[in-house]
Image (tube, rainbow, N blue to C red; front, side, top):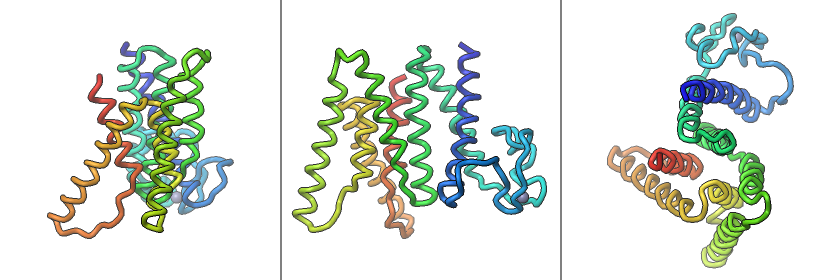
Amino acid sequence: MLEKIFFGFVLGAIFGSFLNMLIYRVTNNVSLKGRSFCPNCKKVIPWYENIPIISYIILRGRCSKCGYEIPKYYFFNEVFLAFLGSFLAYKFPNLKEFFISFLFFTFFHYMAVLDYLFMEIDIRPAYFGSLILLFYKVYPFKNFYPLFEVSFVVFLLYYLKEGYFILKGKEGLGEGDITLCAYITSYFGLYKFFLILSLGASLIIIHYILLKILKKENNKFPLVPYLYIASLILLLKSF
Ligand SMILES: [Zn+2]
């Protein structure tokens, strides 16, 4: 058990480091090919300065050449996914189930962080992830119920979106939102999806009230991070 938890930790840290690279390159329009480099002095980072979590601590969050301060979210992502990985390894002793859950949460983490920090939506992992998750659940093609659940959510939200547009004359729900909901349903199933949706909505309301009390201005409530937090709460609750 302990080695499995350690394996989950290492895998999570590596994926956290990979996501940091991805987030940097997606938000700065840098090609995904090529080795990692310092955004400031362009120094290519040698492997021993690119070890997740450890290198950040040893270098004290700075580039070894120019002293450029590496964004704190680099460290956060690596540590967070490392703990998430070990928790998933603990919760899912079955290797297949572990990998499917790990994939679901790391993809979700990437989309949530991108939305929260950069107000950017990259929904491609949700498309790709939904396909993998559905295939995993439906294979060997005896039980098609998961497919029905996801179609139900997609059609329901699609009609809500169209209805809202007819009534209000403006876009209330984006296609990205619908894809994300399909993604959550393909992992959690219909019942838990509705739980996550109501939990996410409650979190937004609580955040809104807190901001009102603190008299802080904020009109942006990105949906993805709230649904991500709600999914994590549901994951923790059921262990
Ligand atoms: Zn540098």
